[in-house]
Amino acid sequence: MSLICCEAPSLSRRQLLAAGGTLFGWAFLPRFAQAAGGRDPRVVVIILRGALDGLSAVGPVGDPTYAALHGKIALSLSGEHPALPLDSFFALNPAMPVFARLYREGRAAVVHATATSYRERSHFDGQDVLESGHAGPGFVQSGWLNRAIEALPRGERIAAKGGLAVGASTPLIIRGPAPVLGWAPHALPTATDDLAARVLDLYAHRDPVLQAALGKGLETEKIATREGMSGEMARPRGGMDSAAGMRRAAEGAVKLIAADEGPRVAALAFDGWDTHANEGGATGRLAQLLGGLDGAFETFETGMGPHWKDTAIVAITEFGRTARVNGTTGTDHGTGTVAFLAGGAIKGGRVIADWPGLKDEQLHERRDLKPTTDLRAVLKGILNEQLGLSVATLADKVFPGSGGVKPLLGLIA
Image (cartoon, rainbow, N blue to C red):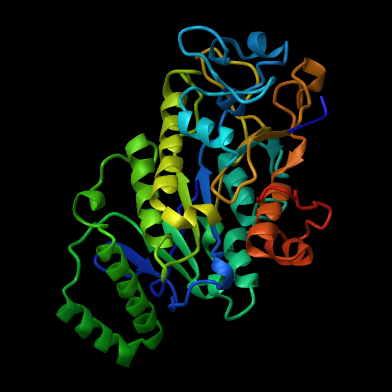
């Protein structure tokens, strides 16, 4: 069928700031006025750590091989928990009704049979490639999203406002020389104004760089407090592999990137997608995770307010899972998978797929969904149309050595 429309980062002393146990500031975050013409774009990247089973997230129900191949966890348009039709060929897991609605409204899209350039099946290396933006593992100095911010013209409002990392640690994807702030639930009581002033004065004499970063971290803490990001919201209520944890992370991101003086680019990482056993299809563990992702999409939609129209969200994973179910009703590490796009800026209502088929001879190594769209093409398309980065910059600086991978254009409305 033709085109159809676990690394723990190491932080240095200068990076890690105990700003009330809530915010970790890395660099300068100045205030800028609203963008001329009213367009004020946001880009949010959600990493699904563990490898998402794309065939149970968005099922190719129109492929005659699908049901028998994917077995008990294959989606179906009939039965007790029917899948949500996207078009005549693909159907969405019923755990994602919000995404289905956004799709119908033209504000969500799916890219199927996609993957990075990585063809092995190690989580560590796969996530390295996904987040570093390089063709192979081992390049861990910075991530492609940070380099995208760094590549913007000096003084440009998005570059100056920097990025946002949500969670207890900073994902590789947004680590690097560009300014990044972080938000995580409170682990320590918030510092009083008097204590903060004394610590700032101490570092002004002994470590001016840390003093400047801490000052900006405290400034962003004030934004968080003003937006109600304290109390119940800041108390742990499930990790980033639970529906509650995903929604809470999205709430934190929304409050900061929707603020006029906040960052414009954000990265979140949701864990738990390594479904080797008892995966489930329309119901079960995978459906619970997809429901959490769906709740995060809804949180962004309702929380961004007027900025929703300028928001582009992409959810990506390091690789897919096997086309056949294993002996424990799960799936093992695979290759091709899906990417979810959502937001008011997305030109949606489409499943974009150069479908490879699911017969044995059509599978990658006769076991995995064969990737036919380079994920870097998708990411390049979003960065080109949403942030204005040139094709040359994307090929040389953001995704080094990727000149042969052309941006997939037309993703942004």
